[in-house]
View 1 (cartoon, rainbow, N blue to C red):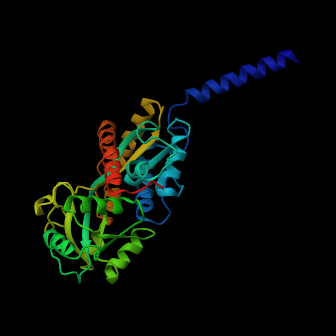
View 2: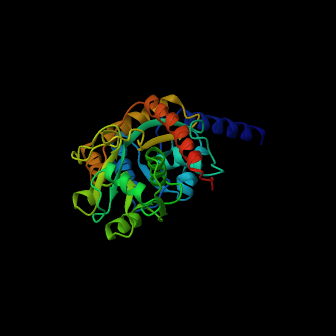
View 3: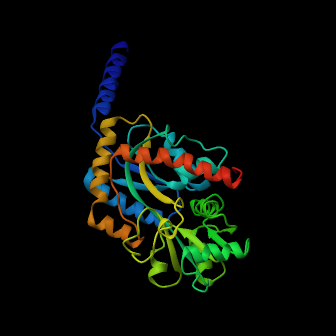
Length: 319
């Protein structure tokens, strides 16, 4: 009996050593998307997963873990095994805004994760309903100052990036515009197009702009957008400081080995440069922006305190 146990132990140890020695990846990788299936983030995530599968040599499977502004899914990845088999498609909302708007976030955006690669980055655009008699930001600000509290702006929800973009605009311009939260960006856009609300900040305004269903007045970024070349930035119109940039990044749990992160960076970078994946991003008026781990780490580190300051100045209480 003792000999049998000995050989069993030896076989188990050998099997364990082989398992440890298996090069990454030896099984499917799960990509956690902290937003519902069927939305714009989910659609693009599935394209990224399909593209990465081709270059990684193993399947990349999307799993949606929804709730609390993206913090539930993000928290799940923060607590996952740091082996590269569970990764997160993180967004501005979950990584930079939620830490400033929620009391209890189950992770530290800078310490709980290791960045793999930036996925996309771009500016928000302020658009107004077609019937609003303002054709640029100066006219809008003048209208708001003459009618304090009479204009309103929608958002994808209380404490969303859309909401904080509005608060930043109000702070820079010194105006009073009423915030109207909706349960997501789609119903907010429906309200703008119907004329029920006056304006909306959004990161993916393309389809509505191109169809003439709303008027884009300003780009909240350092440069004009290729798809909206005639729409000036806030800075060009005399309001520097209203920069609101969204970003998505792929992250792994802190402690994931550097060589595993490097393999994921390479495969994801190839996928993000793939014409099919880039075309899917184009449908959402976005562009892929694969870069280094250090680049997205620095950007995240600068965004978190900036939005915390906006929240504090606006007097918003963490939920």
